Length: 340
Image 1: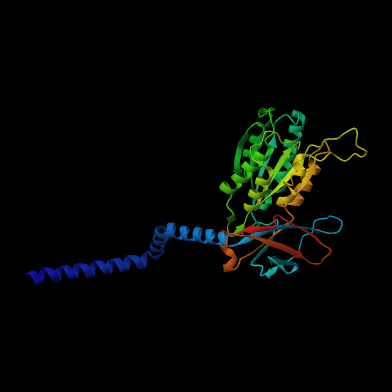
Image 2: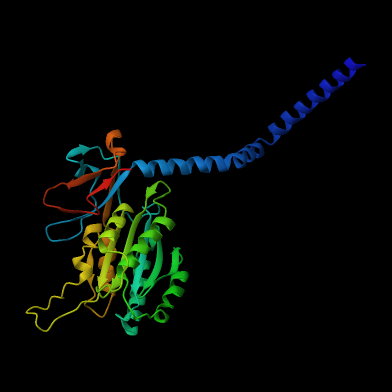
């Protein structure tokens, strides 16, 4: 009797296996899809771990190239560059120019706008129009934008988005953000860098993100809690370039019409992070933002893997990048890196 039950159980098991095999054969695509869905979280985690690993090991630098007349140079290739770490030439493991294509290098920009009273309502309206054109000009570069304001305090009005309608609504709020007690420009730049680190991934779809802060102010910071040197250090660690648009100041005692240098310029905030300072000398901001767009989108990114000895020694390593032909001028966003 017991043997008969065992035999019947075996037959039922065999029938079940045959039915299951037939079902899988008929619905192979469904079975495959279910398998993928079940393992998708594992696959995603693995991909994320790969990105984190690459990001940790890879040391990247942003450079812009100009000719003898100061005109930006595009179209260079990896063979035009050399990288030296502590005087020793290294292999270029990653190279990419910032191109205007569907699969272009991602671009993340934070606008930090001074609402301390340095700019009039009329200037803010002109600035709003210029920013709109600027964003449209960069729309094809896989771009994301965020907007913060600063006066006595720093506020995030819009986190990163690539939707023009959201940015448009945010610009409408600018006139309501007047705060004339102080000008926390360095604090604003520091907050913008923190925002970029937290909200804009260093790598998107296998491409290194270009990060930039556009600081628009009169160039006279007041009341900051963060020093300019600290902001520069943090910007370089986050591989972020800072561009400044400054409302110029003039003196009647000057013998020339050149604007007076501002504390913001003297601090080296732009130059020491691979950015550039612009003067808003015209009532029309459009030409200024056109030049700024040219500057931001005319860069190259180069990266290399440090060797095992320098990767974890905790020391600062100087990196120098050369370009050929030698008549070209090169500007890199920072002078080296500190290993962990």
